[in-house]
Length: 216
Image 1: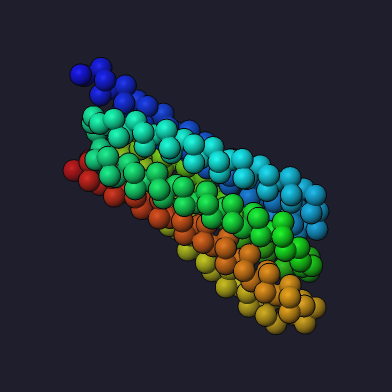
Image 2: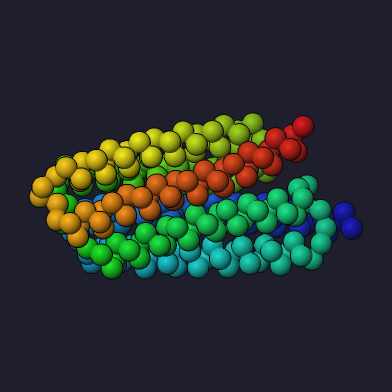
C-alpha cells in the first residue's frame, strides 16, 4: 500500500513537472510567433502555430494520464480535487495560447514598427508570466515557499501586462496609419495576450492556495 501511494505521488509530481516544461515551450513558441507576426513573416507565424497546437495536444494528453492515475485512488499528499483544479488551470493557459496562435495565422495585420515593438514587449511580459507559472509547478513538490514567491511573481507580471495592453490600445486608437480592420485585429491580439497572463495567474493562484493549505 505504501509503495502504491508513493508511486502515485511520484507520477503526479512528475506529470506536473512535465506540464511545467510544456508550458515553458508554449511561452517560447508564442513569443516567437508574435515576433514573426510583427515582422509580417506569415510563414514563420504558421510554423510556430503548428508547434503551439502540438504542444497543446501534449498538455491535454498529460492531463488525461494524470487524471486517470488519480481516479485509481490513493493519496498524493494533496486532495485530488486540488490537483484536478491545478491541471484544469494549466490546461486553460494552453488553450488560450492556442486561441491567440490560431488568430494570428488567420488575421494578418500591418503594424507600424514602434507599435510592433510594444506588442512584442507585451508578449515578452506574458511569456515571462507563463514561465514563472511553470516554475510554480516545478517547485510545488519541493519548496512551498519558493512556489509562493513564484506565484506572486506571476501576479506582478500579469499586472504589468495589463498596463502594457492599455498603453498599446491607446496608441493604436490614436494612430491614423492603422486601418480600422487592423485596429480591431491588433486590439484583440493584445487582449488575448493579456488573457494568457491572467490564465497563468489563475494557475499560480491555485498553486498558492495549495502551498498555504498544506504547509500550515
